[in-house]
Image 1 (cartoon, protein in one colour):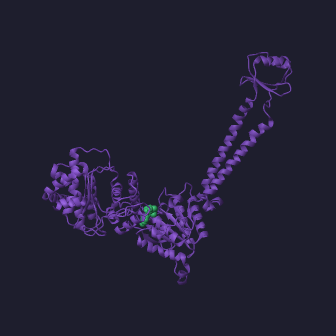
Image 2: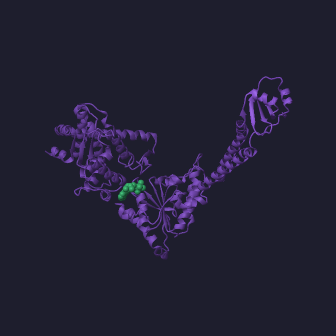
Image 3: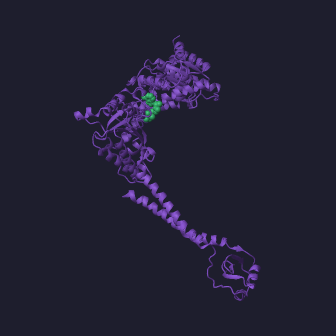
Length: 605
Ligand code: ADP
């Protein structure tokens, strides 16, 4: 019902405005226009004309303090200001003019009629037509039906115009395997029909941002050589209730006409969020969602329309959307592992001129945790750096530097640390590295630097995982916390004071310790009880506590104890290796950047 009301209301509003304009025009503009046409003369001329009996008709406008008059044959109009003249009536009478006070037609009657009535009506009709056209477009009327003309926002890629194939998407082997079934189905639907198997209607690609979900969807279309409709979920959310729904209808109508085809809805959580029965709900979004649900039920099996959707918040989707028969298949598109990262780097490296000796394996190890989009960005940053330095191709050092740019920002060119600060930073970084190296389970150090970065970091220690790590033991986590506290421990040992440089370490150490207790069941008191739930798995992994206030207090206590214990352990390691700490810090202070190999050789000397 709402669908119709709202637009109507606004149409009346426009009618009102036009009527008002019409009235104003007639009452104000017309008399003004008319008067503009009278020729102004002085009072003497008026008296002369009266005396010579040259006046035609006269109108005395007391209020405006003026006299409007015509010549004898009414071919010209004049006006003059009034004078205090008691004989005016007599003069007029003697002149033989007619002065009954009737309104004189001052302008051309046809022009006047056109201006007063025809022009406003024409304007009125034009405005009305414009508004109606606009509404038709928005509501998915006849104009909106022509997809390719951009009336509806879905982009269509007919016959894989972008040419993306599975081979362009590096890594993600499981996702590709899963999707290649769809490709096979689109190539050869009969094979499936004969047995009676039906393809899932909707496939949900879930994973963190930048892992290649859009690319995979395009690759499916490219491989199966069918049209590809792409639209973002947010485009369905319109200002007027009901318009998003009609856009959904429109999209599916188009898709069915072009079947077999693939419809890709990016960021589906924009319309697919859980519906909540509370006040102030988003009517428009819910109507669009309802329409989507209906459409997905609507088309019979095997029509050949396959819907792919991407989201990084699968837990926020409405259960009706993920039930069997709708988006029932879920394909995880995770952050790439070591091998995946290396492959992605190689795929993107093909687009730039690159040194033959580049060790992609090493770059992939350094960029642990990077998404496909970040890796593509690293290659591009490296290419830009090569251009800046007037080199013809990208080298290993370009790539290594660009990883640091992506992680920590650019080098700050004119940040000047005082001598004391530089010493503190050097000890702080060596503290981290030394604690990491002395605990056998910690990953070896790749590089240590005390060159300030635009991110605000005054220095950092880059640790490198040698292989893939899927599980972490309690001991490894504890060691990690100890490594994080190593920086502060070194400052305390040498300078007997603390600095603000450890804030990031503190944050990370606390987060780890808290997760160990509340999520990983690594405390004796709470055993295997979940005290926290993760809400945004793919977007930073925020967690919310699910326990009583008393338990929270106890958790806080245990977190403090855990971190304190590791801090003490780090302090002990550094104390036992104070000579090495001094030696390494001095070396780093002088050289500003040292590699992991240099560090290890001094440590083992
Ligand atoms: P998402 O949709 O998951 O946010 P996209 O598919 O839009 O991510 O990927 C963004 C960019 O990242 C792509 O254009 C591509 O350059 C790069 N990229 C991401 N994953 C891969 C991959 N597996 N192989 C190659 N390039 C990738």
